Length: 266
Image (tube, rainbow, N blue to C red; front, side, top):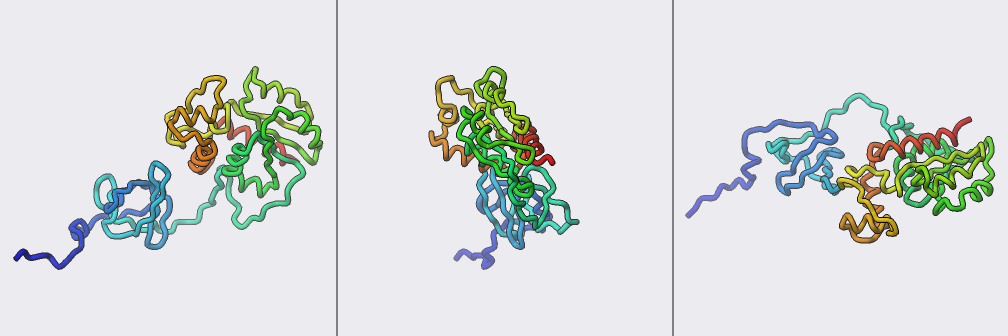
């Protein structure tokens, strides 16, 4: 009869000791039993959370020899607690732990659509709550001069407006130029839609596709990228890949910061 080893521990766990490696953020490892490969995004007592290149998260136990680092077995361990560092918001500002939202200012920030508002909230939400700035969306800027008149901006109620596709000769540039109120600031980015202000690499695509004139831009993007032609679902996918200001193009970052400074100026 064939003799079986009563020790059912896998051979890779019974080999010689392997290095212990701290599970530092962004360390890329492969979990040996599943082959799941991803970057460390969190480490709690006894577990580590990995994120793969598609944004999928998996939680694994911190077992001996449980991971491969550059093809070699390692034992991940919880990183030692270091000196406290000032944490930062998604916009890069220094976070204020325990701070309560300020009572809303009379001034406002207007953006064109819901997707614009959701992206601004994603990156600048913490800062805006501390500053007491409310962001509203307009569903387009065709009636912007009338919107500004109805709002009635003043020294203590400044209005900042973010416009898509604000380039020379565009319809948006002509509308923006018609707003001359001294307590209103209209700025914009050069992208056809706020989707384009998210860096392609963050979304996992080489570039935003060119959509022929006459087609709905968002639908055209979905079609060109082979995504289902569901613009709501596509936007949620794009938004989920935005974790901080680093995922956005500088042309948008500067304009939003400019509006926040304008609305909150004493």
